[in-house]
Image 1 (cartoon, rainbow, N blue to C red):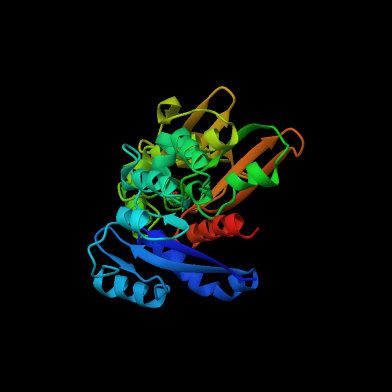
Image 2 (cartoon, helix red, strand yellow):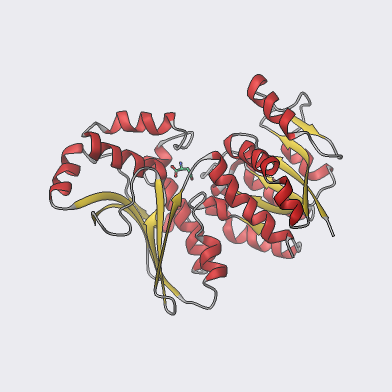
Length: 332
Ligand code: HSE
């Protein structure tokens, strides 16, 4: 039997548009699973389009591409969440890791209105994790956020579901594609940091404010989300020791390379501390992945070490994590 899930996409930048594309591409596959995801509203920062019979996603994508706006109605995302009958909010507004931004309010209002949330938005989860979890539980709604850490690379659901029953003692890895890209290219080209940052921005890996990437702030937020959701900590950004990559020179990378090492921005969580810092990693170590890849190595008591790698950023890649969360909620 087909189950229809009415949803809104709140935030129609790279990730929100990726979700629309993936829903179009995977329509038949989803129907084979008995799932009809019907998008009843799409909102960007200034406009929205609403259609209870299902928004035409091809039209929404073309309009956004051609006119820069998804609709003509000046409706805010939060009004859609409050006023329009639907089951699921896909929250993909830009992240704000100081206040939580519109995303935080969107999620809290969604729960209060009995709606499930799937999100890629790190800020709200990094600063108000326990409040979001409690509000969602209290209202009997579901919150899933695999896309907030490592993009397409499965890590949260891997640790919480696939490795269920294991005690996790340590997680370390590369959780920022922009920094990994910059360090990899600086080493390959012996080129200055600024040039490689500009490349990472052009490729769409960097945050709107790339300071978040290169100062280690983005990695720290992802570690807070991991620490809270996998280790059951009650951590915030203040609990993370953070150093970024801005002072690393091509000469330092060359010296490391001559000794058989690469420099990587490594995030690490164990039961006593959460830390982000550039570290020397042996060239053939599993954490020494190149380009914009992310990697996570999870130490478990029963399964031993488990290492995963994958694309940590990108529109379709992040939408992949969102889609898998959507399917997990409604498949059963
Ligand atoms: N700016 C982030 C990165 C995007 O480079 O990894 C994904 O969170």
